[in-house]
Image 1 (spheres, rainbow, N blue to C red):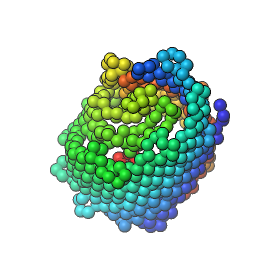
Image 2 (image 1 turned 90 degrees about the horizontal axis):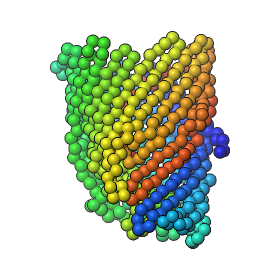
Image 3 (image 1 turned 120 degrees about the vertical axis):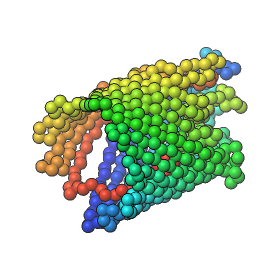
Image 4 (image 1 turned 60 degrees about the vertical axis):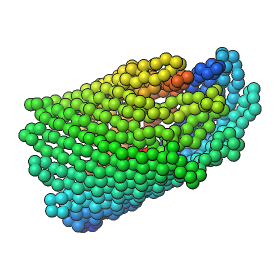
Length: 542
């Protein structure tokens, strides 16, 4: 295993003169990381196909960020600002190798060694402007955002087959993205509480061009263009010791899908939804309690909707699914606290849940196709008990919980129940010592259990760190951290499909590392920039 070096540098500044703030930052991170994956896949069609693969990747990654903005406070009641962010990501995988062995009904069929060369670049531009002010008894908060970017991926895969023809697959993919969003929120004190209402508008597009010169995968030229309008109203009031909140949100979404410039009606959609929220909070002596119900939707990301095929090897393809529907979440949560104890119990139902699946190509059933699919529903209950006391110089933040889902799918002609609960335990310790020393000791344990159509194996890790501040104002911090001290972190998962099982065994990524942090602050001040952004859900989808 090659030892990896990674560096991160950041510089922030803030110039203030009367009501004017000029803010900015520069950021760079870069280095290498390695991943080792072992896969074992069985597919039951007319023949039992078994594929065993071992892959190792060494990637070079770089990330640049630059920020420049201005904020002006006319007085305590009115402020405006504008902010520009530029982000640039790049990845190169000069060393990707995969060895695969294929058998049919238990007899050797073929084996090959794959070499893959991948490079991509992803520049992003983002502009935010805002106004926050008080006009009479009205509080006004307005944000508008513009975002544009492109991503270009180039990949060459070479397969040296033992029994059949060698193969070279070259693909080129380019995404062009754009977003415009505006959000207005108005608040007004009314009766015994506060009334808030407002709306949001977003316009998003993504252009996608994909080419494979060998003709193994289909070339595409498509575009998704979406419009979203939402409006909401919320009222919160206090009746004695009881805090009550209630709200409702309306969303209208239009999505147009174009293929080679022509509108495809089957993949174009219109959604109209109404989502309520209710919350109640009441103190029972020293115990505070809160009960809330929320309903919301999450639309599939653009990568999940991308129907272009990614070539893994000659028997494994990967893509999104342009026919996906949004997932609707209903959440009922109880929270209570007593001194330094906290209890959380929640029930969540996901309708039209989007799940990662592996199916078989209809035209070539021996080829596995990993994609996304909507399932009717998933029910899930979460129980979490946490404690965060301080004993002298020792601050503890311990939590224990369990997550259990109810989900069923068809597997090899029968219904498979994915109901096994997953336990969770975390212990975060901070020791604040004399002369500016601080020691951290953290541990996390995740037990074996089901998540969607996955059986996830046990995982655990321990992190330690020691730091010291210097000077009277603690301006200089020197800290040494060690992550995953005992090299315990491994991925062991089993994915169940309708006619297949895919197991990932003892795979690892370079998560065991040591980090040295040097941080120096002088004349530091808190930023007065009040922009909160608009179209945040759409940004996440892009």
